[in-house]
Figure 1 (cartoon, one colour):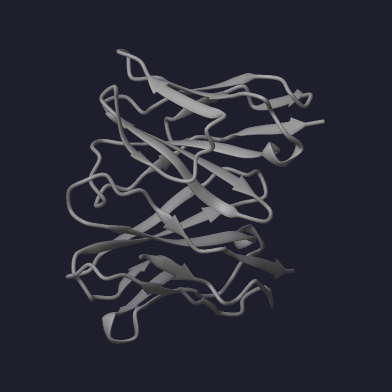
Figure 2 (cartoon, each protein chain N blue to C red; figure 1 turned 180 degrees about the vertical axis):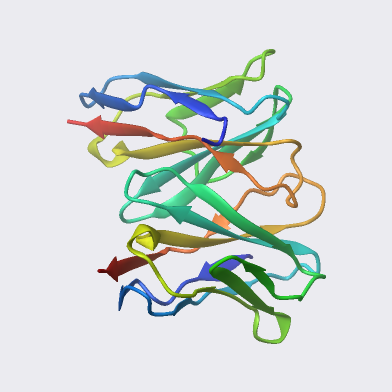
Length: 116
Length: 114
């Protein structure tokens, strides 16, 4: 069965600090997809990134970067020079299989508070 | 704006009642998913439809049902409501049903059962 663990329930940082959100997943599939979503205080879920299991290249998008390591089943998310607008709950999610009808399995989320 | 719309935004009702939540997917998306977000359970998958047909079921109660219409919009029906059904209900859509598709979420419907 698939499972996503986000061990950090809440993190608080001061603006401009770097912060890493951890995500560990479990799956028996060799083909799977990992996602990060952001849920700001307004409540909507915003898609941030998708990664497939065959692509272990790290990705950078502005102040955001993602580190995917199959050896440790982790897909961590780093925000560099954090800003108050980064305050949100961040969810890591997993989907198995290329085809078929597999929904997202979410972790419990990490609440990030960035203090000015 | 994800392009997924959900109505209503808020819903307050009493125990025992029945409500219908509506979702319109992004233009061109064939697959619709329903999720429930509650404080104790987190984000839980309820049900998926693809081009009008049910494709996958998650932790959906028998009191809940859904359908996807020919125009691809979807409705989630919740009946015999209980206090514990109070939650944020999200609809998401994707182009197809495969796990590789990112899902785009609507703004959610906040249901409060009194």
